[in-house]
Image (cartoon, rainbow, N blue to C red; front, side, top):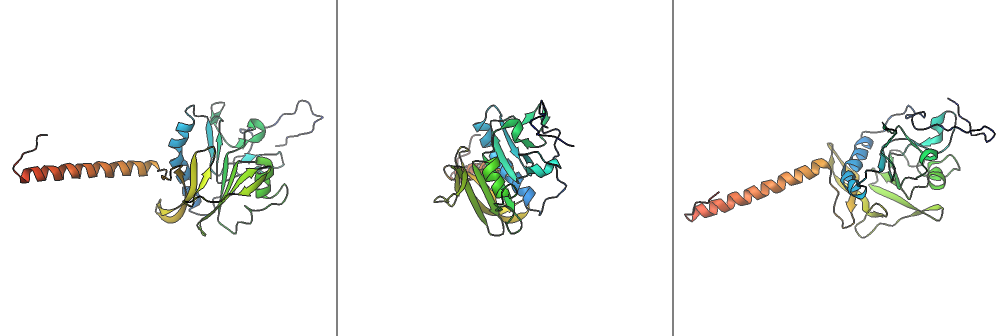
Amino acid sequence: MTFTLDPSTNPVILPDHTQLPDSDGTFVKNFQEHPQSILLTDSIEPHLQKLHPDGQYAIGQDSGIYWRMTEPPEKGAEAPDWFYVPNVPPNLDGKPRRSYVLWQEFIAPLIVLEFISGSGKEERDRTPWVGKFFVYEQVIRPAFYGIYEVEKSSIELYCHVANKFELVAANERGHYSIDGLGVELGIWQGIYQNLDLPWLRWWDSSGNLLLTGWESSEQERLLAQQERQKVETLMAQLRAVGIEPQL
């Protein structure tokens, strides 16, 4: 597949997300990456639905962001482990997105996250037009770029200021405020999908952990169980003094 950006060609026809590859043939590097993406998406979805009642937002998980035309086409894309774009439709022309194409939609992601499974050299590479850090900083230009290292239990978060990334300091809770999203990003140590790890997670602006669907259901079940136990205790106390509770 060959496309041209030669200005002498009239009109210039650029490919859309249905014409560009949605995979470069590689696979996830370890067992933790896929659950980590699911955890981030599952827990923030209810917040995003309130933030975007019209449903106009997109989340990418190990999906391509096309920023230039190359041959082969996938060489002109970066594939963050997780990213969020506000104010864009979740589908295009009634079809699920295969990738996110900057020249088709123009809106940059608000946040891009990379999960390090090696040395982190690739995610911090500032080589012009080649390195991930350079491409995110100078071309894709998300408001926030996060580098998460599970082995070090750490987050390196950058904010785009005056055409460059500046390192963001953690707040008093050890979290990082994501302006425009209304949440904080931080590390949570616990078990998710049978893995006990320092997970990357969201909190609200008051420091409350954003729960997954299962966690919310489990919390509701425990609260209901506690309420039943209170009622049963009260009924036993009444019977102990000769009063039969009326239900």
